[in-house]
Length: 75
Length: 253
Image (cartoon, rainbow over all chains, first blue to last red; front, top):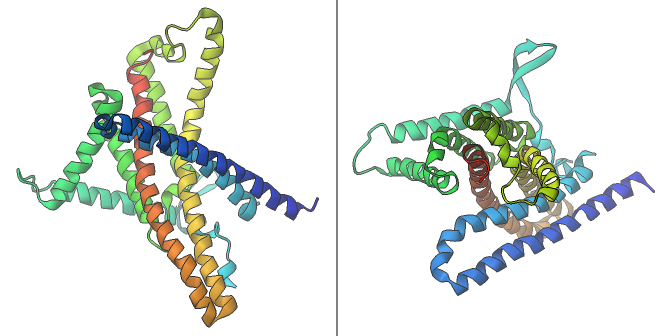
């Protein structure tokens, strides 16, 4: 295979990881909303955990985006 | 043509003048060093200048400093308890440094220090070794209970210990890579969207100006997101520091 083509294929494949991160982030916010609607008085206290969970889940999508960028622009 | 420039180019470090030569390696004053100094100077000016008057009814600057102080103090109390407050100077320094360098990095044509993995890795390793040294100094060999949670059946304990040790060793990697990758990916995306607008104008002339409005609007929205990411990543970096320090304060919970 042409190395240039393999590079672009690899970058595209790496971006699949971002889709799985979307599931993770959606789960974080979805579960938060479910809990917050059941017990709105406790929701404000969990905001920090919400942000933390979002950042932890989102980081892995950024990692795969980073791999794609490295393939496209650095290698 | 300038519009097809490599989006990674913005992270290149330029040396300004050499300082010292250690074991064949040239240590030079770089733009990374300049922006670190600017961040430290800004933070020091903000905190010292705001609290110089120390009034009972705070001025606007003083209440900004107080809000920042209370924010970090609450963060430590929430994750590591009252004992954690002895780490307040470390956590506050890390939080302010990451926050200010992230925000300075968003100014166009400036340099983002936290997009260099060496900087974030240094901060993460500092926290990592602080946890290990403080843990052994405070608790002795009892610190190793961190790797063996209580109430685990004896026959799966070896596997749990192995997993705990691996996850402990992976901490500085994920801690540093998270901040670095977020800032780098954000800057590269902004650059790509911006160069798309420039390419439109270069290719289609007057019609391109109309076509470029869309990517420019997108870049503005993306910039707002990057502002959020800059604040959020500083917060996450600091709160993960607190969580890791909590392990050295209360191992074997």
